[in-house]
Amino acid sequence: MAAKDTVLIISNSRDLHADLMAPLLAARGVRSFRIDLDTFPRDYRLSQRFLHGSLQAQLQHLPSGARVDLSQVGAVWNRKPGEFAFASDDLAPQEKAYAQQESEQALFGLLYTIDCFWMSHPTALRGACWKGEQLQRALCHGFRVPASIVTNDPQEARDFLAALPGDGIFKSLSSPTLAADKVTDEECIASGLATTLVTPEMRACLDAVSELACHFQEYIPKQYELRVTVIGERVFAARIDSQDDERTMVDCRDMSADVGYSAAELPPDVARRCRDFVRSYGLSFGALDLIVTPEGDYVFLENNPCGQFLFVEQLVPALRLFDAVADLLSKECLCRNP
Image (cartoon, rainbow, N blue to C red; front, side, top):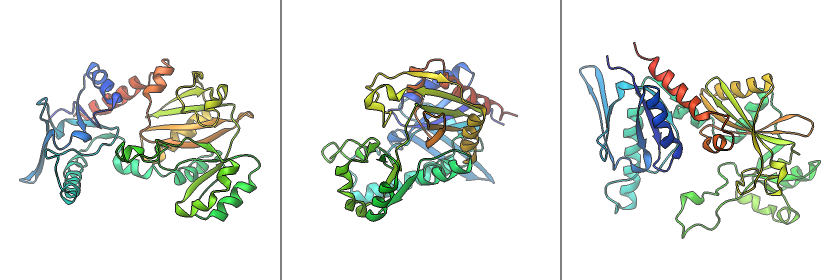
């Protein structure tokens, strides 16, 4: 029986997280094989054979010559998606659509056969990505969540905002980039929209809600914010002093603002809720965004099941997130050896 000594990394060629992980795994006695989806299948060769009652499956990276037999894979780090690339760059629209469908079937029909530890499995990730469901699940785990509405009824939106004791906010359900990353530069009409306070001008335009279901919430006053990263059983919390700069008071993701980041200690019950919330999806990783109110309440905003964490470790070096991921992947990989 082949030794399970390989971590398979699924990402794209722009993912710095994957670049930094390979040497950490090597230092722990584990090799890695990386699939960059934005160069697949152009730069890879795969083979999946069912013969004599058994499965044989291999992958090869053509530019480097690196190979892996999938029986050697003990863990998969499912990091980031990417759009497939093909050897021919002049495929007709139907040809390209068919090639994408067939490539997805070939690749994931191969990968789903691997009996190993996943961080995290695509089916679990898919179930964890729905923001409305996250709010319901957070309530079930004892979190406070903001009053929220998702609707394409303009009057429902007006009534909800009018009933709030304070300000309301608009935030995207899918991505703050407004799908700018899905179109060419020439096709792009807006680069993104941060979480935004609903102004009188916006209220006057609420008839536009009938075009597309929109997500509105009450604005929660903040003492500070938390980025909580769950890695296996470990919980790491970074405090973000977002109220120290007006650019980050509503949305802390403006990295041009010079606000403080520091390690934080969560109350045991809050740490348990975060860990149990992530585990309830069958995930081994999650990046949760929380608010701490001036009164000390912990308010759930959302979970990012494949969230970024390099920026957290860069800003708070005491939080050794890369080591924690490498420890978990290598441990789970090696423990599957007979």
